[in-house]
Image 1 (cartoon, rainbow, N blue to C red):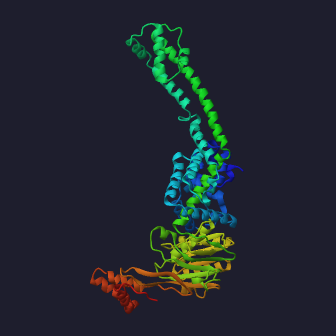
Image 2: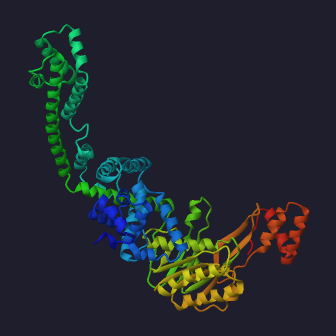
Image 3: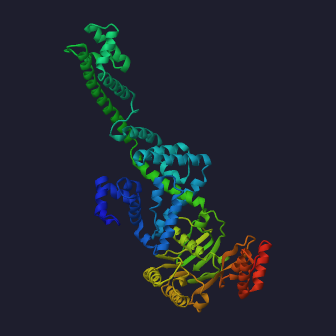
Length: 586
């Protein structure tokens, strides 16, 4: 396969990769999802991630049919990456995509389940040791040596569990020797600390170099000690070199100058000859040590290469396992037909923000979860209504999170979830303003994927915000009808439920209801939708809060005038309930 056959790899990118690591290595990095190698080769991290995502599953990325769906995907990826055991694992997590093949989805689900069980089974001390081992991978800079040392370190932690099997299957003793050898062979030469004799010879050579630079001073030192004749100079130099370098006297005497005209020339020529002799000795010893070290690497066999794959795989899976454990994510069930049903679902963004989250149950399509969802199976489209700030948009986002996570082969934030595979996710959030441009762009973003995908999920929030209410109701009714006609699933959030009647079959209207005000005058909402009921806006609660928070009598009087236009009795009862700590209404 040619590099330019991969999405996002044009002539410039190809030239960069080929010039840095070569075609074969570049293709291997793309196929294995190796972000670090591509970045080290010269690609921008964001570019490398985009290339790898498309290489992993172009069809999966196409499933994210709208900007808002892609935004949810990116948020999920970043949230998962926060639990990565090192930077390389975070990079690999960022290349994960939705998948379209159920076998690949199940394979990833199995891996994450094993990793979660493994992580949950480790004690705190072992967890810390494992994280330190993976973090050291980044400190070394990645690559073969880092992988081998990390594999050895993981084995030494005593960690066990199915997620660690790729590492635990490696020959630890052989990898230890290979790690020492690889570190010593780094940089293209035999490094320091690899061999005592080699170190002695190198240190002796450095000492001789220092003496050569100060030959005249050495002569003066000998003379100050009473050395005068040639024989005495020879013996003084031999003893000085032996004491300073531990070079054997035979090598020194062999290097003695024979034709020097004076003492300084004698010392200088002797040291230069000895330097050449030490060069030869260092080269011979380095070659022998290199052969031994390369033998240690070869003795480890395929385990050195396997270590790179094993460490990358375990790091990624363990990171995802930590993510699943942190948010108590559960494995969803893929079913035939058309379904999206969740029981006890939680919005990941709210949980991550530390907010108290009320789990909700919701369903569209065919399912058999029962319980709180009994009687909701079979409705192809739902219309979700209710009060402002009632959690309708959050519920849509939660459903989107569940679908994307499930198609990525990851567990989801719900006690139980059933869904069928889909080709397109059309998630559209409410826009703050409307004009002709917004209307046109919105229709262009939501209609084409609805009519082009075999299995599309529509999650559309307050469609009426893009144009005037009367025409918006007509358009929304048409979009609901189109969803039914195309055999898609859909949930539509709207305040225009009455204007949509009669809804096409099979469709259902659900509502979210406010319960009143809390003692600190915050709107209290039951976020669990009531199936088959139209939720109503609750201006009486908002006006009640405005009355209670008015800064002066004039403001209060103005808000009470508004209250009379709604229902003075309801407003007064609401204020009374809030003063007594809040009571639950209907």
